[in-house]
Image 1: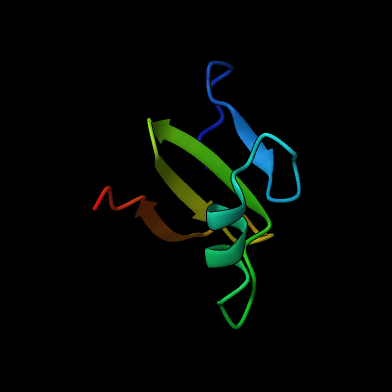
Image 2: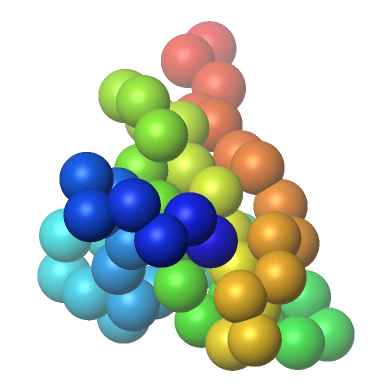
Length: 61
């Protein structure tokens, strides 16, 4: 996780986080604790210790 003030790192439980992001974060052995919106429908998932565990995007089929 970056320490820049402009970053919008949120708790995974934050109501602003879409359900599909939360669902993906729960799939890990150590579930994601934080997320950061990188772009429209693109998110970084972080463990509770700040380790990046996944970059995800919504597939617009």
